[in-house]
Amino acid sequence: MMTTTFPKYESYKDSGVEWLGEIPSHWNIKKLKFCCKSNVRVLPENAPPDLQIQYVDIGSVSQGKIERVEYHAFKDAPSRARRLAQRGDTIISTVRTYLKAISYIEEEYEDCIFSTGFAVLNPSNFFDSKFFSYLLQSEIFIDEVVRYSKGVSFPAITSLELGNLPVSIPNIEEQKRIVEFLDRTTTDIDRAIAQKQRLIELLKEQKAIVINQAVTKGLNPNVPMRDSGIEAIGEIPEHWQVTRLKRLFLEIDDRSTNGSETLLSLRMYAGLVPHNDVSDKPIEDTALVGYKRVYPGQIVMNRMRAAIGLFGVAKIFGIVSPDYAVFRQIKDLKVDYYLNLFKTELMKKEFLLESKGLGTGSSGFLRLYSDKFGMRQFKSEVHQCLIY
View 1 (tube, rainbow, N blue to C red):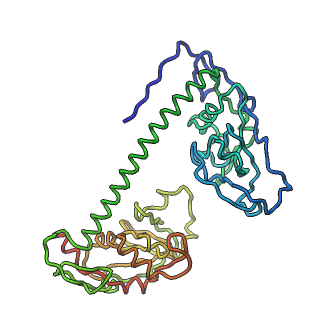
View 2: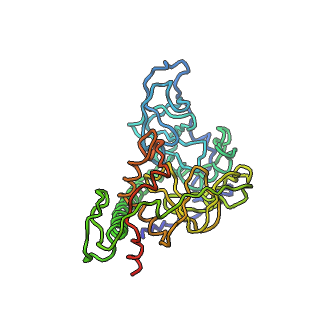
View 3: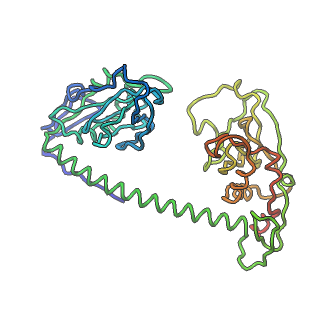
């Protein structure tokens, strides 16, 4: 694990700001509005509607990085595009700042137009511009912005409140040394993260291969094989059978009459989980009347996302969206086996072929109807091979 220790300064003083606490005795404190200029440059109101712009929205920025630039005619920009920035500025989202859409502006982004959801801050000459950007990205500063933000769905901070937040200021030479340290350290950390992410992706690929092999070919590599008669399936162990899903699962449509049951949310990796565990947005019982009841052991399919393997097995009694399909098993089988089967690349491709509608699958409006799901042919009684 990468750890960093920091040397102690000779003396410290009370900053006079509760959330800043003690700071080195030679550092100063000023309100942000005395440290920078805000939103100095903006696109004129009379800009031609057909003006082609490079647009950056809040969703295009992560902490310390502009992830993407969109190209639009000015009139077609997704939200008000007004802010202009120059190299050395820092953009900080004043809406939902907890998402950390904060970034230093490098030269390549000087021609971009930024959403009015950003404040564009140009630091004064007693700040190193890169240090100033690191300062605004610090957790302690972000937490304070969030504390002063108002609103429920889209909490935002006003320019006045943002400008009144205090910041600590070392001398300029010390700022430069801090920037050199942070640039070097964060580069090392980013490199380590990239290596870990690559390892995670390789492990995910290996996991998928293992699951696919187990659920389509079994555990014994030496068992005699035979042609399944189905091109997509290929060879199967000689003692396996092939049947259609409609002979294994039956769709049920049991509706809630009062909406009082536990609402379950279907997630790709977590499966079916209580809605309250993944969302802080309460839903009234009256809004859930007509939702589908689901019982432990039943399979739930998101019709719109079946082609990406969005299935789940209920662990508890509850209700799910009426647009989902709920199936109970007809035969005595291991339902978790079929859950893994439906998530394999082989089966996702089959589901995609049978899905109908507009779009390209994961982002479109393709729907797998229950009759098409039931007609798919699968190896039956494969679960026995996982037991013996």
